[in-house]
Amino acid sequence: MQITLANLGPRQKGTIIQIIGGRGMQSHLRTIGVREGKLVRIVTKQPARGPIVLEIDGNRIAMGRGMAMRVLVEI
Image (cartoon, rainbow, N blue to C red; front, side, top):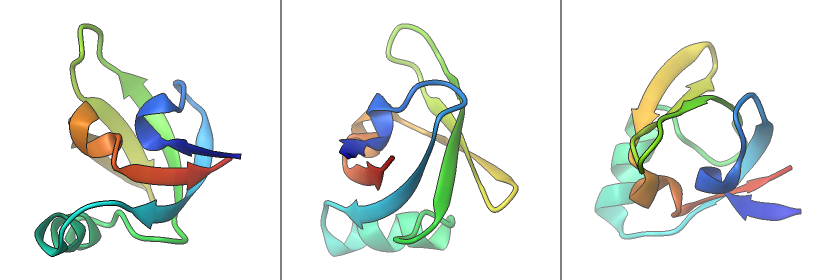
């Protein structure tokens, strides 16, 4: 099942399958470790449309919901 990263619940895991966006956004996400094939886990989702904290390869990354809506994951 494919959903966006923003739709994963707290402590849920998924594998990144696609980043939807321009070259600049794709480059930025890959630089911080958000790449296709990586296993990602949601650590927390802040209320009131705040950032999402995720974990990839033991590193925690905060990401805005708009950006998280452009990352597709397989659960």
